Image 1 (cartoon, rainbow, N blue to C red):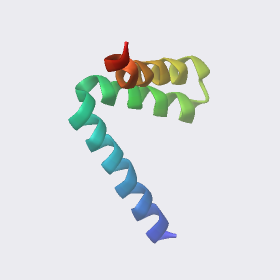
Image 2: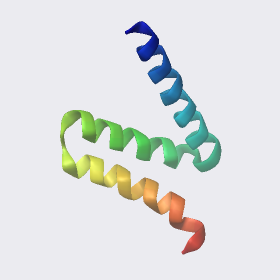
Image 3: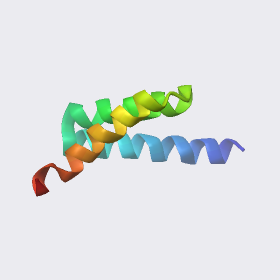
Image 4: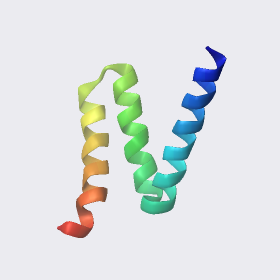
Length: 62
């Protein structure tokens, strides 16, 4: 079990660092809102976070 928790933590930190490097503070805020919304089972907050991330990813195409 500790190995699974360690791998999960490494993955999360890697995703956060990639978002910070590529999308800046907006990416971290979007990821934070999405994570908080999912953990709190609040669809409004998770939807806002998902929209922020989608706009950041699709921004160059628009």
